[in-house]
Length: 175
Image 1 (cartoon, rainbow, N blue to C red):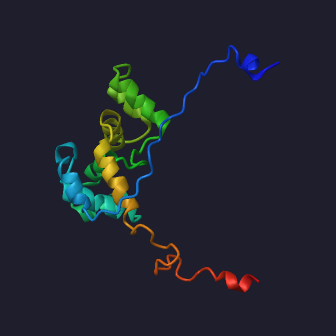
Image 2: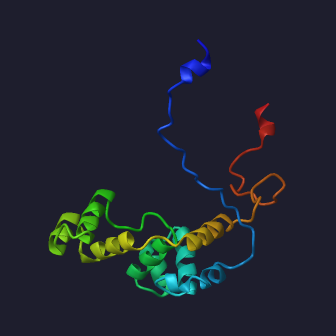
Image 3: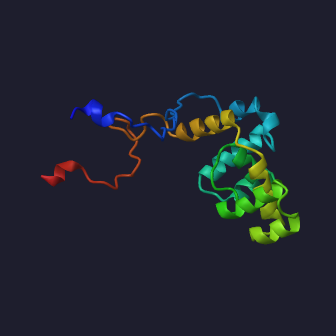
C-alpha cells in the first residue's frame, strides 16, 4: 500500500494560528511618542500611560503604578488593558462569562454582580475589559518598548554587561 493510498480521504480539521513575529525593537523613539497618535483610544494621556507601563512592567502593582502616573487605579487598569497587558481584570474567566451574560441582556445587573462575586468596582472593570479590546498598535508599541528596554544584545558574549552580576562561574573551572 502506497502512502498516497493511506492518505486518501484524510482531511485537515484543525489549523495553525499565526502567532506573528517576535518583536525586538532597538529604536530610540520614546513610548510616549508612540502612544501619542492613539491618545483618543486611551483612558488617560500618553504620558500617564507610558508611566503606567514602565511602573507596572517594573513589578509594581496596578495601584502603585497608577499613583505614580497620577491617575486612579481604575483608570490605570483600563489603560494597561488597552495596552494589551494581561491579567488586569479582577474576575476569573468563568466569572467574566457572567458579565458577558449581563451585557447580552440575559441577566439583571444586580444578579450579575452577585454571581460574579466581586464588588461594584470589579464588575465595572470587568465590563470595561469585555467591551473594549486592546488597541493592536498600542499593544505592539508596548511590546516593543518592553522588549527594547534592555538594549539588543545586552548580556550576550562581548556585551560588556553581566546581567547576572557574576552569579555564574566561568566554565574554565569545570575541567
